Length: 440
Ligand SMILES: [Zn+2]
Image (cartoon, rainbow, N blue to C red; front, top):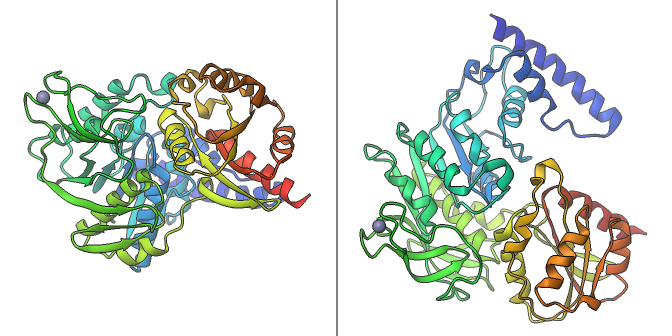
């Protein structure tokens, strides 16, 4: 009774919030969820969910993969409720579901797809049913919030011990594949893998996690690394790494943006290896639910700020999000794979959503090629400038500006191609300022 009342109140609040947001021209984010959770901490338990729930978790790639799954389902004619704005903690998920439920708490959809923060998986799915869980990767990310990556994996492992639903795992990440053994009675574990691609290496270029077998602590042997610690590994002692593969991506061609799976050629806007991994997860979901992914991946567009290519004052500009060392390394890897001369803007904030600890920048591999100048900005403009200087980059070619507008003005003094890397809370303000600058 009380919870029905909470749902009705929240519906009224949502209407007010909508009007208020229109007047203030602001996005209310997960405000509704925060209020509802105060009124009824376990509100999620009282929602009536009768359709399959598909969730994606990872250090990197949650938003892209969740949105690609949603898009795949929609192009197959399904009605989907999803937290596509990326509000992936409990209050964000409450907001999404409350906005899409009837007055008696029923969610009207064929599927619910959710990106869920790694540390919230056990919390959310104690309260709502879960049909399929996708786990992409685990890297160091926001250490001050999540603790060490091992602690996080053990929490999810604990949750999986009693989980019997579909579990889609990246076989090429030893931190992830191990979770397939959490519940030996679960017959619904599916592994995906991507064959060696052109820029794979036989040594690890970037700092990574998971160099030891989680079962017997033996050092893992790698045939090759795709990026970071993702690659073809094997434990020489217990042979961990030899799982049966459900979805195997082959013939990755980043130039022509295509790859194969089970003799089917896919075209998808994936010009980097980590997006190919995200799409391997999407294909796995489509196979489990007997849906088509080929047509939807062909037309799926990556989100703003994910390898987004734009022109600012006629200058080619490529924008990437990087909220942890792996994200930054992947962005710098793409920059290195481009042989043209370029300049880099790195915007670094330390707001609560970024994690207050920016020590992760010391794990970035700053070996960069054909970069003739670097501009830094954000609240930690000087920290990132010092980090880059320490890597051996000529300090006379580094300019730091606390003010983002000043930084952008300085960046476009030349017509050289630009790469922009921004961390979590820096990304959207940077995109906005670039567009404003472009119009001036
Ligand atoms: Zn082993």
